[in-house]
Length: 76
Image (tube, rainbow, N blue to C red; front, side, top):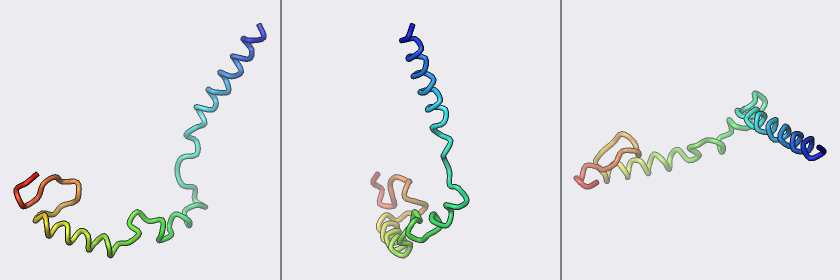
């Protein structure tokens, strides 16, 4: 009888833990100043990335993004 109460309590605690696991997703308004800093950007070195893109697309002979396969040379 005592084990049933313990198992029920553990099950309830696990269920409540699972339900509250996604409650803290997203950026809070008071955290936006930290996320807006330059070093937090996905593209922290825009000039370097532009130069890399220029070299990449010049060698491939194509444009449109990095996710496309193949290029202007005829090889895939």
